[in-house]
Image (cartoon, rainbow, N blue to C red; front, side):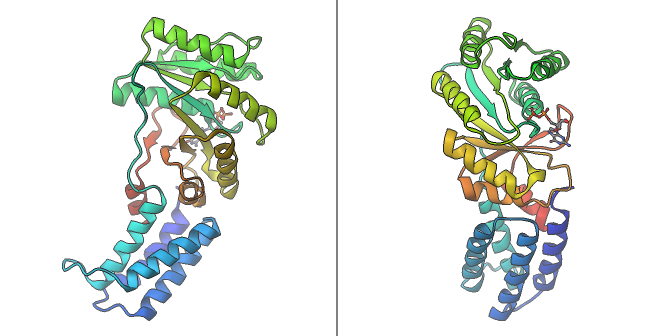
Length: 297
Ligand code: GDP
Protein backbone atom coordinates (compact mmCIF):
# COMPACT_ATOMS: atom_id res chain seq x y z
CA UNK A 1 0.00 0.00 0.00
CA UNK A 2 1.17 3.55 -0.73
CA UNK A 3 2.86 5.59 1.98
CA UNK A 4 3.60 2.61 4.24
CA UNK A 5 7.18 3.61 5.00
CA UNK A 6 6.28 7.26 5.42
CA UNK A 7 3.29 6.47 7.62
CA UNK A 8 5.37 4.16 9.84
CA UNK A 9 8.05 6.75 10.36
CA UNK A 10 5.73 9.67 10.94
CA UNK A 11 3.53 7.72 13.30
CA UNK A 12 6.62 6.75 15.30
CA UNK A 13 7.65 10.40 15.51
CA UNK A 14 4.17 11.47 16.51
CA UNK A 15 3.92 8.93 19.31
CA UNK A 16 6.91 10.51 20.98
CA UNK A 17 5.27 13.92 21.12
CA UNK A 18 1.50 13.31 21.40
CA UNK A 19 1.29 12.79 25.14
CA UNK A 20 3.55 15.67 26.09
CA UNK A 21 2.01 18.20 28.43
CA UNK A 22 4.73 20.64 27.50
CA UNK A 23 6.52 20.93 24.20
CA UNK A 24 9.87 22.67 24.17
CA UNK A 25 11.53 24.27 21.20
CA UNK A 26 13.98 21.40 21.32
CA UNK A 27 11.10 18.89 21.01
CA UNK A 28 9.79 20.73 17.93
CA UNK A 29 13.27 20.77 16.47
CA UNK A 30 13.69 17.05 16.90
CA UNK A 31 10.24 16.30 15.58
CA UNK A 32 10.66 18.43 12.46
CA UNK A 33 14.05 16.86 11.82
CA UNK A 34 12.46 13.44 11.81
CA UNK A 35 9.52 14.58 9.67
CA UNK A 36 11.98 16.10 7.22
CA UNK A 37 13.97 12.88 6.89
CA UNK A 38 10.81 10.81 6.54
CA UNK A 39 9.52 13.04 3.72
CA UNK A 40 12.83 13.03 1.88
CA UNK A 41 12.97 9.27 2.17
CA UNK A 42 9.44 9.12 0.72
CA UNK A 43 10.86 10.95 -2.32
CA UNK A 44 9.12 14.26 -1.71
CA UNK A 45 10.75 17.07 -3.66
CA UNK A 46 13.41 18.70 -1.44
CA UNK A 47 12.22 22.26 -2.05
CA UNK A 48 8.73 21.22 -1.06
CA UNK A 49 10.08 19.61 2.11
CA UNK A 50 12.04 22.72 3.01
CA UNK A 51 9.01 25.01 2.74
CA UNK A 52 6.78 22.59 4.59
CA UNK A 53 9.20 22.21 7.50
CA UNK A 54 9.65 25.97 7.77
CA UNK A 55 5.87 26.39 8.06
CA UNK A 56 5.50 23.60 10.59
CA UNK A 57 8.28 25.07 12.75
CA UNK A 58 6.83 28.55 12.63
CA UNK A 59 3.34 27.40 13.57
CA UNK A 60 4.39 24.75 16.11
CA UNK A 61 6.58 27.10 18.09
CA UNK A 62 4.26 30.09 18.11
CA UNK A 63 1.18 27.90 18.13
CA UNK A 64 -2.28 29.10 18.90
CA UNK A 65 -3.54 27.47 22.10
CA UNK A 66 -6.53 25.17 21.87
CA UNK A 67 -7.83 24.09 25.23
CA UNK A 68 -9.13 20.72 24.10
CA UNK A 69 -5.70 19.53 22.96
CA UNK A 70 -2.47 18.83 24.80
CA UNK A 71 0.54 20.78 23.50
CA UNK A 72 1.79 17.54 21.93
CA UNK A 73 -1.51 17.02 20.10
CA UNK A 74 -1.43 20.63 18.95
CA UNK A 75 1.93 20.13 17.31
CA UNK A 76 0.61 17.03 15.55
CA UNK A 77 -2.41 19.01 14.37
CA UNK A 78 -0.06 21.55 12.81
CA UNK A 79 1.75 18.75 10.94
CA UNK A 80 -1.56 17.32 9.73
CA UNK A 81 -2.88 20.72 8.63
CA UNK A 82 0.29 21.43 6.72
CA UNK A 83 0.31 18.00 5.02
CA UNK A 84 -3.31 18.61 4.04
CA UNK A 85 -2.50 22.06 2.65
CA UNK A 86 0.45 20.62 0.80
CA UNK A 87 -1.85 18.22 -1.03
CA UNK A 88 -4.28 20.99 -1.92
CA UNK A 89 -6.38 21.63 1.18
CA UNK A 90 -9.98 21.33 0.07
CA UNK A 91 -11.12 18.52 -2.18
CA UNK A 92 -11.26 19.78 -5.76
CA UNK A 93 -14.49 19.21 -7.69
CA UNK A 94 -14.88 18.36 -11.35
CA UNK A 95 -15.99 21.13 -13.73
CA UNK A 96 -19.46 21.37 -15.24
CA UNK A 97 -19.90 23.38 -18.45
CA UNK A 98 -22.68 26.00 -18.57
CA UNK A 99 -23.94 24.33 -21.69
CA UNK A 100 -23.39 20.58 -22.02
CA UNK A 101 -21.39 18.66 -22.93
CA UNK A 102 -18.59 19.21 -20.41
CA UNK A 103 -15.41 18.26 -22.22
CA UNK A 104 -12.57 16.53 -20.39
CA UNK A 105 -9.27 15.88 -22.12
CA UNK A 106 -7.12 13.11 -20.68
CA UNK A 107 -3.39 13.48 -21.26
CA UNK A 108 -0.29 11.67 -20.07
CA UNK A 109 2.57 9.38 -20.94
CA UNK A 110 2.03 5.90 -22.30
CA UNK A 111 1.54 3.37 -19.54
CA UNK A 112 0.51 5.94 -16.93
CA UNK A 113 -3.03 4.56 -16.97
CA UNK A 114 -4.72 7.11 -19.22
CA UNK A 115 -7.08 4.80 -21.07
CA UNK A 116 -8.01 2.84 -17.96
CA UNK A 117 -8.64 6.11 -16.10
CA UNK A 118 -10.83 7.37 -18.95
CA UNK A 119 -13.07 4.34 -18.38
CA UNK A 120 -12.92 4.71 -14.59
CA UNK A 121 -13.81 8.39 -14.76
CA UNK A 122 -16.77 7.70 -17.04
CA UNK A 123 -17.94 5.04 -14.60
CA UNK A 124 -17.50 7.46 -11.67
CA UNK A 125 -19.48 10.20 -13.46
CA UNK A 126 -22.33 7.84 -14.15
CA UNK A 127 -22.42 6.18 -10.74
CA UNK A 128 -21.83 9.19 -8.49
CA UNK A 129 -23.23 12.02 -10.59
CA UNK A 130 -25.77 10.28 -12.76
CA UNK A 131 -24.05 11.45 -15.96
CA UNK A 132 -24.07 10.01 -19.40
CA UNK A 133 -20.57 10.30 -20.94
CA UNK A 134 -19.27 9.68 -24.43
CA UNK A 135 -15.74 8.26 -24.64
CA UNK A 136 -13.53 9.39 -27.50
CA UNK A 137 -10.59 7.50 -28.98
CA UNK A 138 -8.02 10.07 -30.16
CA UNK A 139 -4.92 7.88 -29.90
CA UNK A 140 -4.61 7.19 -33.60
CA UNK A 141 -1.05 5.90 -33.39
CA UNK A 142 -1.83 2.71 -31.55
CA UNK A 143 -4.73 0.65 -32.92
CA UNK A 144 -4.52 -1.31 -29.66
CA UNK A 145 -5.40 1.84 -27.72
CA UNK A 146 -8.62 2.32 -29.70
CA UNK A 147 -9.48 -1.33 -29.19
CA UNK A 148 -8.77 -1.00 -25.47
CA UNK A 149 -11.16 1.96 -25.15
CA UNK A 150 -13.82 0.14 -27.17
CA UNK A 151 -13.51 -2.86 -24.87
CA UNK A 152 -13.93 -0.57 -21.85
CA UNK A 153 -16.99 0.96 -23.52
CA UNK A 154 -18.50 -2.50 -23.97
CA UNK A 155 -17.77 -3.43 -20.36
CA UNK A 156 -19.38 -0.21 -19.13
CA UNK A 157 -22.13 -0.27 -21.72
CA UNK A 158 -21.17 3.24 -22.81
CA UNK A 159 -20.74 4.72 -26.28
CA UNK A 160 -17.22 5.11 -27.72
CA UNK A 161 -16.58 7.49 -30.60
CA UNK A 162 -13.78 6.51 -32.94
CA UNK A 163 -12.83 7.18 -36.57
CA UNK A 164 -10.08 4.58 -36.71
CA UNK A 165 -6.41 5.43 -37.20
CA UNK A 166 -6.65 7.38 -40.47
CA UNK A 167 -8.39 10.45 -39.08
CA UNK A 168 -6.82 13.51 -37.51
CA UNK A 169 -7.22 13.67 -33.69
CA UNK A 170 -8.55 17.25 -33.81
CA UNK A 171 -11.27 16.20 -36.30
CA UNK A 172 -12.12 13.18 -34.19
CA UNK A 173 -12.52 15.36 -31.09
CA UNK A 174 -14.69 17.93 -32.92
CA UNK A 175 -16.92 15.32 -34.50
CA UNK A 176 -17.27 13.56 -31.16
CA UNK A 177 -18.54 16.74 -29.52
CA UNK A 178 -21.09 17.26 -32.31
CA UNK A 179 -22.21 13.66 -31.83
CA UNK A 180 -22.48 14.13 -28.05
CA UNK A 181 -24.76 17.14 -28.59
CA UNK A 182 -26.93 15.11 -30.94
CA UNK A 183 -27.14 12.14 -28.57
CA UNK A 184 -27.44 14.24 -25.39
CA UNK A 185 -24.27 13.01 -23.76
CA UNK A 186 -23.51 15.50 -20.98
CA UNK A 187 -19.79 14.65 -20.72
CA UNK A 188 -17.22 13.96 -23.41
CA UNK A 189 -14.01 12.31 -22.24
CA UNK A 190 -11.21 12.40 -24.79
CA UNK A 191 -8.49 9.76 -24.53
CA UNK A 192 -5.46 11.30 -26.28
CA UNK A 193 -2.23 9.73 -27.49
CA UNK A 194 0.67 9.11 -25.14
CA UNK A 195 4.39 8.62 -25.67
CA UNK A 196 7.08 7.01 -23.61
CA UNK A 197 8.62 10.43 -22.90
CA UNK A 198 7.49 14.03 -23.08
CA UNK A 199 8.14 15.08 -26.68
CA UNK A 200 7.45 18.05 -28.89
CA UNK A 201 5.20 16.31 -31.43
CA UNK A 202 2.95 15.02 -28.72
CA UNK A 203 2.69 18.44 -27.07
CA UNK A 204 1.91 20.11 -30.40
CA UNK A 205 -0.87 17.67 -31.09
CA UNK A 206 -2.33 18.08 -27.62
CA UNK A 207 -2.14 21.87 -27.91
CA UNK A 208 -4.01 21.71 -31.22
CA UNK A 209 -6.77 19.65 -29.68
CA UNK A 210 -6.92 22.01 -26.72
CA UNK A 211 -7.13 25.15 -28.90
CA UNK A 212 -9.86 23.70 -31.06
CA UNK A 213 -11.97 21.91 -28.51
CA UNK A 214 -11.53 24.27 -25.53
CA UNK A 215 -11.92 21.57 -22.89
CA UNK A 216 -13.41 22.39 -19.50
CA UNK A 217 -10.83 20.18 -17.84
CA UNK A 218 -7.44 18.82 -18.86
CA UNK A 219 -6.52 15.97 -16.57
CA UNK A 220 -2.97 14.77 -16.52
CA UNK A 221 -2.73 11.10 -15.63
CA UNK A 222 0.52 10.24 -13.85
CA UNK A 223 1.87 7.02 -12.43
CA UNK A 224 2.59 7.60 -8.75
CA UNK A 225 5.07 4.71 -8.77
CA UNK A 226 7.49 6.81 -10.83
CA UNK A 227 8.22 9.19 -7.93
CA UNK A 228 10.12 12.33 -8.88
CA UNK A 229 9.71 11.53 -12.58
CA UNK A 230 5.98 11.92 -12.10
CA UNK A 231 6.60 15.37 -10.68
CA UNK A 232 8.83 16.34 -13.62
CA UNK A 233 6.28 15.02 -16.11
CA UNK A 234 3.59 17.06 -14.38
CA UNK A 235 5.73 20.19 -14.58
CA UNK A 236 6.30 19.74 -18.34
CA UNK A 237 2.68 19.01 -19.18
CA UNK A 238 1.54 21.91 -17.06
CA UNK A 239 3.96 24.34 -18.74
CA UNK A 240 2.83 23.26 -22.20
CA UNK A 241 -0.87 22.74 -21.68
CA UNK A 242 -1.84 24.53 -18.48
CA UNK A 243 -3.58 21.43 -17.16
CA UNK A 244 -6.51 21.81 -14.75
CA UNK A 245 -5.92 18.78 -12.56
CA UNK A 246 -4.01 15.58 -11.95
CA UNK A 247 -5.08 11.97 -11.60
CA UNK A 248 -2.54 9.90 -9.69
CA UNK A 249 -2.69 6.25 -10.64
CA UNK A 250 -1.39 3.12 -8.95
CA UNK A 251 -1.66 4.48 -5.42
CA UNK A 252 -2.55 0.88 -4.52
CA UNK A 253 1.04 -0.10 -5.26
CA UNK A 254 3.88 0.39 -2.81
CA UNK A 255 4.76 3.87 -3.96
CA UNK A 256 6.66 5.91 -1.40
CA UNK A 257 4.19 8.73 -1.97
CA UNK A 258 6.54 11.52 -3.01
CA UNK A 259 4.53 12.35 -6.12
CA UNK A 260 1.26 12.65 -4.23
CA UNK A 261 2.89 14.99 -1.77
CA UNK A 262 4.80 17.16 -4.25
CA UNK A 263 2.65 17.59 -7.35
CA UNK A 264 0.27 20.21 -6.03
CA UNK A 265 3.10 22.30 -4.59
CA UNK A 266 5.17 22.11 -7.77
CA UNK A 267 2.41 22.67 -10.36
CA UNK A 268 -0.19 24.46 -8.26
CA UNK A 269 -2.78 22.20 -9.86
CA UNK A 270 -5.01 20.01 -7.69
CA UNK A 271 -4.95 16.24 -7.53
CA UNK A 272 -8.52 15.38 -8.43
CA UNK A 273 -8.58 11.60 -8.34
CA UNK A 274 -6.51 8.64 -7.24
CA UNK A 275 -6.40 5.29 -9.04
CA UNK A 276 -6.48 2.50 -6.48
CA UNK A 277 -6.38 -0.59 -8.69
CA UNK A 278 -6.92 -1.90 -12.21
CA UNK A 279 -10.67 -2.37 -11.96
CA UNK A 280 -13.14 0.16 -13.31
CA UNK A 281 -14.57 1.02 -9.91
CA UNK A 282 -11.15 1.62 -8.36
CA UNK A 283 -11.01 5.37 -8.75
CA UNK A 284 -11.45 7.65 -5.74
CA UNK A 285 -11.97 11.38 -5.47
CA UNK A 286 -8.78 12.68 -3.87
CA UNK A 287 -9.34 14.11 -0.39
CA UNK A 288 -6.19 15.84 0.92
CA UNK A 289 -7.35 15.71 4.52
CA UNK A 290 -8.25 12.03 4.44
CA UNK A 291 -4.93 11.27 2.79
CA UNK A 292 -3.07 13.21 5.50
CA UNK A 293 -5.00 11.28 8.16
CA UNK A 294 -4.15 8.02 6.46
CA UNK A 295 -0.47 8.95 6.52
CA UNK A 296 -0.43 10.19 10.10
CA UNK A 297 -2.59 7.41 11.48
P1 GDP B 1 -2.10 4.31 -20.95
O1 GDP B 1 -1.01 3.84 -21.86
O2 GDP B 1 -1.69 5.54 -20.19
O3 GDP B 1 -3.42 4.45 -21.60
O4 GDP B 1 -2.21 3.19 -19.79
P2 GDP B 1 -3.27 2.03 -19.57
O5 GDP B 1 -4.59 2.60 -19.22
O6 GDP B 1 -3.22 1.06 -20.70
O7 GDP B 1 -2.69 1.39 -18.22
C1 GDP B 1 -1.40 0.80 -18.14
C2 GDP B 1 -1.43 -0.30 -17.08
O8 GDP B 1 -1.61 0.26 -15.78
C3 GDP B 1 -2.58 -1.28 -17.27
O9 GDP B 1 -2.11 -2.57 -17.01
C4 GDP B 1 -3.59 -0.84 -16.21
O10 GDP B 1 -4.41 -1.89 -15.77
C5 GDP B 1 -2.68 -0.36 -15.11
N1 GDP B 1 -3.30 0.62 -14.21
C6 GDP B 1 -3.92 1.78 -14.52
N2 GDP B 1 -4.34 2.43 -13.42
C7 GDP B 1 -3.99 1.65 -12.36
C8 GDP B 1 -4.14 1.78 -10.92
O11 GDP B 1 -4.66 2.76 -10.36
N3 GDP B 1 -3.63 0.74 -10.17
C9 GDP B 1 -3.02 -0.35 -10.74
N4 GDP B 1 -2.56 -1.30 -9.92
N5 GDP B 1 -2.86 -0.47 -12.07
C10 GDP B 1 -3.33 0.50 -12.87
